[in-house]
Image 1 (cartoon, one colour):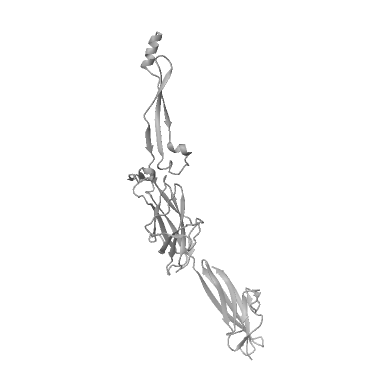
Image 2 (image 1 turned 135 degrees about the horizontal axis):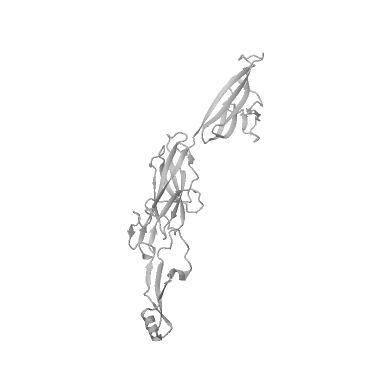
Length: 342
């Protein structure tokens, strides 16, 4: 083939190399952070193609395609998760009992959410009564009464950036009837303020940056449950007496010594707080100095700070023993002595 023939063949079959040049406008401001839902909503993806080819007389040339710009739509997704390590212990008739949840914006655009609760979902033993939803406004992940913001039903939460989370507290009153070990369930739901629906539902022009908002896999509303569990300890107090008379018998006569034994026991689960046992000295008897014992250990009679027991002689004479908090299945034994007056 002649050189002229080669040139003609080359011209007939140009060697075109096409390359894709992505010119994302957002990159001019620096690399965008990676988010769970991908590229941030409102980002313009600008793209053109280039073709290069050999010229008939030698050399190469190139041409550009038209520029295509696409704006990333907003994906609406959210997750809700209980943030308590397990069931929250409570007791019958308790108020302002707190469950904790984490609401996370799983979409690719900034979004606010509407919060609701369900306290009659079933699958539990009793229905707590939700009294308020509270937003952790100071971000310390602990409920602070009078500090954190009480959420107004139907309002929006603060706007969350993609991947940003918000701690939400649900406060409830516990009914009086549940028994020890019963569980009560509360569900928290967070719904995207822009809208919810079946995955793929489109809200035209409602997305961040002016694009559409598209409902993601979660339906743009997330839900999770939290549980209260009744930890109800009950306290029993059993009193008994033994008598030793002056003749080493058991007759109940003047001069006989009575030893009273009191056993305080907690049962159920949880604990009973601030337990104090008081026992009046019976009329016709006299308290025997220094005879108070707690679990076999001698106690002082005076309120001197050395122990939690004392003999009180003013007013109605009595023995008083502080036991503090009694955990379920624990007990304490108190003894003291009186003498029948002669």
